[in-house]
Length: 452
Image 1 (cartoon, one colour):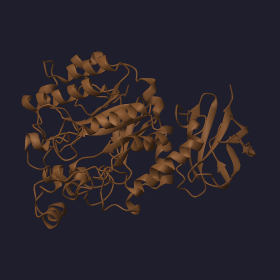
Image 2: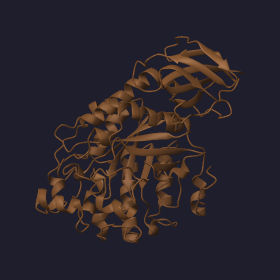
Image 3: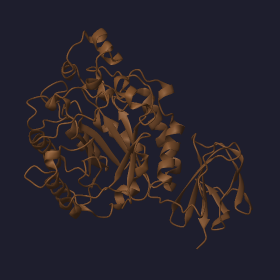
Image 4: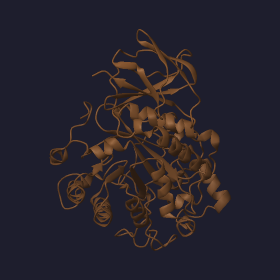
């Protein structure tokens, strides 16, 4: 467990257990944010979460899925865009304007599977409160009654199971701007205004209960918080939901955004919350661009390229984490071309090198350690371990020197991903190797036998 974990309340401590190996071995999950916000698909691409001042962030929010909040902030660029493009129409008009005519769940999940991802997590309800299935108590404000006229979560779940992947559900328990009707979040000295009362706790409880009963998810992925009234023991307690979840899926996993209740793994997001990236199970989530929801203002300068996505993935795995990489589907239901390009590149690289990533473990830094590659002399290097093999990922070509490589690494055993032996010389704890251009752009894999 994490040494800096907050103490779980007594009524949640019974859920603590070891993280199931399927999740720690999976390494990669694919996230999807899809909702009425995919119709305007508009946000200012100002940067990554954790790199922008909070006082500036909310009025210029780069998260397109926060559009409902941002257009309610007076004088925000998004509010002006809503007036200019839609005549200041109410947000809920986007529900009826959402027609995913090109959505092919099987084809999309085939792309997800090609990346090597072990699990898939779609948003079932984001902060706008619109549910992507006919959730109880929504009075028709869902995708079955309006807009798509379809149970999108059911479609995702069937395609995911048919492909042999684990299925998760994202649910925004902390925020629901429609149910609560709280003022917009501006962060002008306030904390997040969120619904905490018993009525919302019961409403959210029935949603998550329905998700568990209908779809038996493997991952229960909450966001922001959980209503305070639903944390103590009682008929609509998060405690009961965890009981139902683990009864339905004994090796299921839950993240840490259900308030101070229970979690199986910790989460960071872009550059925020990085302190949890340490011992124990953790996952970093991020979009391919700066937004989770599809944002038409993003271009190549705002998105991870294929090679950059590979490096992000390998770095996270080398430090013991999982990457939950997000796709923002268009309103019509397709993957935007630039995001598809990144996913296809990640898939191609993993097809060549994935054996040294998926199912791997961290390598003791005393055996060999990473290099940031920002000092000029040394390249970017990360290491993983697969049984008695040390895997070096080196982002360079030609003659390369790697320092800090102990004698436990058998230099003479060096080979490329396809098994081709390569010559390596050693001088103390520095080894030198000549690397060819990689078959797929990104770090080159060198595999070494480890001394017994």
